[in-house]
Image (tube, rainbow, N blue to C red; front, side):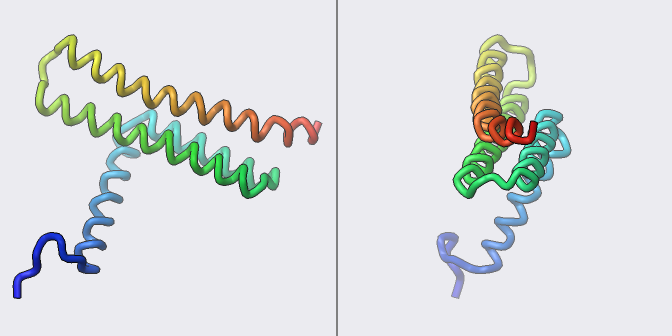
Length: 127
């Protein structure tokens, strides 16, 4: 009996996960800003471990990391799709790409401010 595309199979789920991991690796390999976000996340995680931040603070740090990285992934996908569909220079394309990059910037600024709110009191106690 032939399986319908909607039917759940473990093999299909594992393949889907493999495709998603390949996409993540592609973004990390090809996008300088994604690597910067990864370094910032590693620094925040190390700081969180060393400063023994609370569970709620961990949730906020991880949420911010996820928000920034997901924004970067969506921005990258959008830019690559636009470049494929409209390879020539176009003012409308520039505006779309700038808006998409702006979304990443907003999420990164919010993550940075959240990090300051979380980590400054811990660092102040060390001084």
